[in-house]
Image (cartoon, rainbow, N blue to C red; front, side):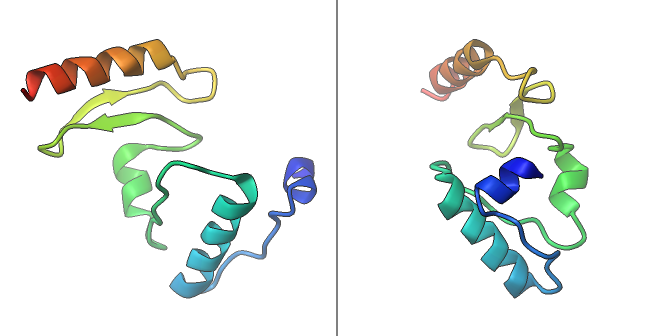
Amino acid sequence: MQSNIKDQVVFASPKSEEERAFVAGACVRKLGIKIPAVLDGFDNTVEKAYTGWPDRLYLIDGKGKIVYKSKPGPFGFHPDELKAAIEKTVAGSR
């Protein structure tokens, strides 16, 4: 929580989709997140389907199939594994 205060990304829990989008956008901007970010709904359908918490890296191929799923991060993140999966996926789509 201290890092959230330092980074000025402390918000009350959103009560609507609009508030949730505002909070997410503010976090993306304040934290300088450069990768695409998407919002899950209040029902957390995506969270339940992908078990993305605490954080994970996924690679989804052009057909929508999960071809790589990291272990929970940040200690489960292994960039070389993800790189190899990307290279294999790209090579297989040619």
